[in-house]
Amino acid sequence: MELSRPELMINSSERLVSVVAKVVQECQNGLPERMIHLSSDVGWPALRKCLDTYGRRIEASVEEWESGLRMRLPRAVVTIEERASSIVVHGYRAGPGVVRDRPLLPAPVQATEVWQLTEYLTAPPAGAGSVFTGDEERLRAALKHESWLVATLACDVLNRSGVPAVPRFVRDHDPHQSVGRGDSAQGDGTFTEVWEARVSVDEYALFEAVHPGYAVQMVELGRMVRSHCRALPDAVLDVGSGPGLPTVMLAEMFPGARIDAVEPSPAAIPHLVKNTAGHAVTLHRTGITDFAGPRDYPVTVSVGASHHMDTRMFLRGLKRHTAPGGLIVVADEMVAPYASESERSRAVIDHHFVYIDQALAHVPDSRLPPVEQRRIRALRDTDRRIPERLADLLEEVRQDRWFHIGDDSPWQRVRFCVLELEALVAGVDYDVERKTWVENFMTLAQDEGLEPVEHRRVHATVGGRDLDAGTHVVALRNPHPAPIASRTL
Image 1 (cartoon, rainbow, N blue to C red):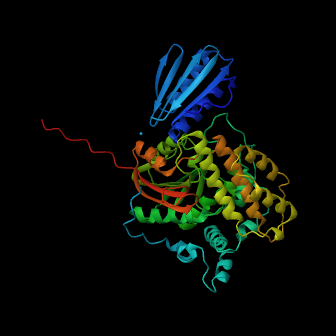
Image 2: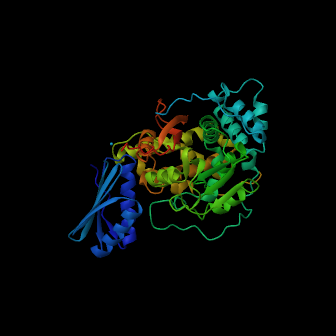
Image 3: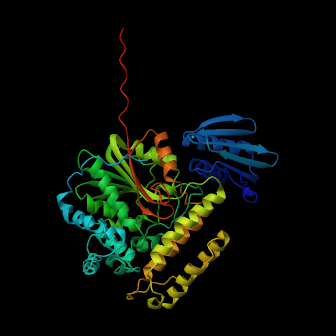
């Protein structure tokens, strides 16, 4: 077992709850054991009362005694105990998709061109990273397509083929144009559903489209919907929509569906409003655990959001709002399996740096503005074997983040890598970014009564197996309730 970092001071019941929440999620997401020693100037009765409330909220089984309590949940048990003047939090961990065998439903008529272009852009040999002779011009034209899905796919195919492309809707974006920002982003002091504290949402909204493998996950998500649904959905619940790029892509693939977008982040909401304007999208400013909407969506999806939340409660929320027999599709990044905190840190570092290397692979330093030349050199030259160096690197590359309006070089790729490094450092700290591995994710889903339907790793980072690190898409079925057996009198 790995012990905690140096002892922390707890000055409120809420702060202790946030630490316990973190330990719960660490154990559920694969860490075998976790112990944290805390000092506290808050009385144990007040702490225990707050912990009891938290335990009920996350639906844990709570056992109490005079100086402590124990929470039992699927895949995790956490004990919180008063010892002299300190508090000890001790958690430990308690235990492949099916190949597609159904034909795809027809693509929506309004989206025929989008689906035809995605099939062209994801078909070999372009999908394997080489451009057909004479096809580069067609791919460059696709960068200018009005569909964000098509333009983002073309960007990824070109980059894998040696051309560091950027979609036109990213190049043309005016970062100084107001997005109607309301109240400022602020955290709630817990480790759940608060991610803007460590990642710049404004830059995320601008540069995420150059993330390697970003659009292909949406294409695979759409294919799974067309493969495993009886009919094209007329309503879709989109959980953790962020600034809205995946939501827009979803609307482009299924323009006949009403999309309810659930997003709790005050920082993301203005971008989400602006980006989804003109699409059949209704916004709900809340998290999935508090969402009070319908419980009969035929399709529920989530893209890139599960690792920002308590995984089990996230899955429970998806199930609660999906109709019996309905489909749930989750696309997200997963890391390699780990059995210790140090292994987890190494898995997170290796995973994120593959994305960074892929994004920068073909970017010519000489074409970049001078400030981006300095930034790309720092990103390429750092010693990745020393995790402590990465926080210093992040501080360095965060400086002088200007927008180079009118510059045709692929500087946006460099700036995306700053976001990736932000996610990496947050992931090493297990704060806000809490990635697990795909087998564990599917195990947690089965614990919640969901049935695995299909799984695909659509973009690899580390490892050669389909279950290794990278961008994954998982389809789950919310089963019909088991019939009540009749009794013969």
